[in-house]
Length: 143
Image (cartoon, rainbow, N blue to C red; front, top):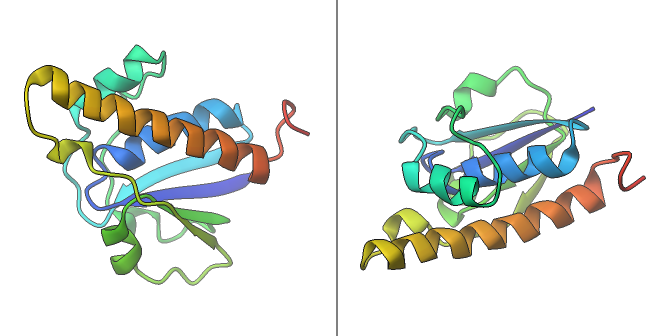
């Protein structure tokens, strides 16, 4: 079973969303972790946006990358440029992938405009996660 780490700056939005979708699409065929260079807590708007799509991330925790030093990751996915530039070296065989997603926590405007920004990023991450699993994680659904 593959070990996947999703990394972003604060482990509050983008990496949490990606963790939720990667778990969903892999159907238990991989161990999914997410972490940040810092920890900011899981953003309630990310939890809400995911719940709208039927994915519950309310039990997720915001984790710091050093908590996972002993895990032999197969893949490290960075979902923001800051994390890619500041990701510590992992002495592992991990293959790195990078896809920058806009930080929805920085969205401004009305509550509905901010919610729309979270949904837009959620949908981008959903598409990325579904494609990643289809290409890299052997599951009974895609093998």
